[in-house]
Structures are given as C-alpha cells and as structure tokens.
Length: 103
Image (cartoon, rainbow, N blue to C red; front, side, top):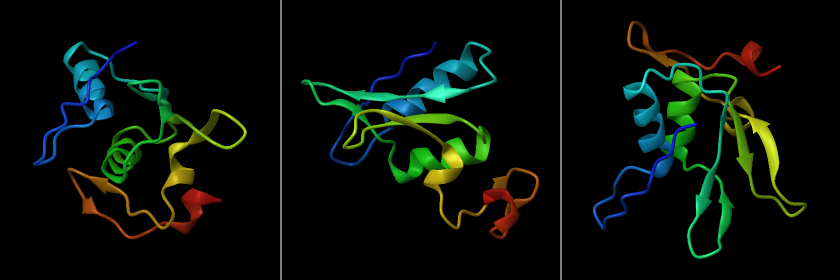
C-alpha cells in the first residue's frame, strides 16, 4: 500500500493519486491493482481527475478505481472511465482509439 498527498497550489499541483504512484515506483511497486482517493474534512472517496485517469490508463491498464456514487462506493476498471481513450507509450507515442479494447 502506498500513500500520496495532494499538494494543491493555485498554479496546479500533483494530485494525491500521482504522488502515490510516484511513491510506489520509488519503492519498487510495479503492479498497481486498485486505487482510491479520499478527501479531507469528511469528503470521503473522490474520483480521479482526467489527468490521473489518463496516467492510470496508460501505465496500469486494468486497475480498479474506487468511486463515489449515489448508492455508495463502487469499483470500476480504469477503462470504463476513459471513453474513446487513446493509448500512449514511450515507444509509440499516442495511438488511435482501439474499440476492441473496450468490449
């Protein structure tokens, strides 16, 4: 288990999810299976922003994400949060949307 803290700043800043992923990599964590963000001041589970979703999708496909919903917390695959997503890799750059990946 790896933790991260959002270092919010008016110019932007890394979300807790990205900080946690960096901490995992720095400590030899390679297989991220599940991720959750929890807000302070009693906000509970919060969903990842678009940038976090894209990073998870690119580096950790198949990751399960905990999300708030009307019925309570639910778990979804990162792919379900990325409609019409384009995959990216260091070797190939951005690739076209692959409809087969989302069936």
